[in-house]
Image 1 (cartoon, chains in turn red, yellow):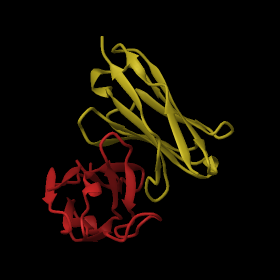
Image 2 (cartoon, chains in turn red, blue; image 1 turned 60 degrees about the vertical axis):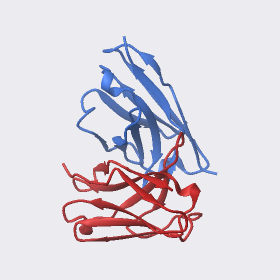
Image 3 (cartoon, one colour; image 1 turned 90 degrees about the vertical axis):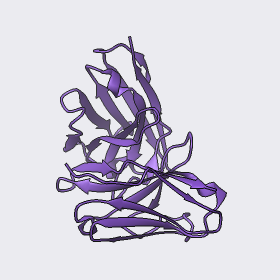
Image 4 (cartoon, chains in turn brown, red; image 1 turned 90 degrees about the horizontal axis):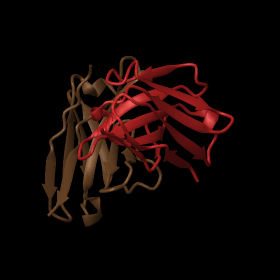
Length: 108
Length: 116
């Protein structure tokens, strides 16, 4: 089955840019979705189809996808962005779902 | 507004069964595929199952295939997960989620603990 690889943790100072990667075999040929999960809460979709944002998600959140790596970029990081972030794709012809292992974003 | 309310979790012995429910409101339930996603304590998200908008297609993760069954009732706007032959490794917070391109709405989760 398809495997998505994320770094366990990323740290960034407030106001700086955080980049969270999601690696997978030729992931650039798939659509990647990103979720933010704050402590004790359900996940929230922050980017879909590689780079689109749902309504209500700040423009500071953006995404890209090419080759074997997809990236979630959070600009001007705020304390409230501290959370776990998960990437997700569809597998097996769109019948199964795969999540990455998650990345804990720490705001220093 | 879109709302999903998960229920039915609890403490159950290994080998026993449990049925989870997810009640939807605020959108046309019968137009969307639906999913169950779980999260073991301190772990990441794991997809469990999907059901098509009309219930005609169902797919389950290999880890639960043959033991769990997803179903839905479009009249009562309710999603179900029948869990049989439960194992300790099934202990998790179970979320229902609205499908489509991505999971754009989630329930609050219901906790299942499998323990003797």
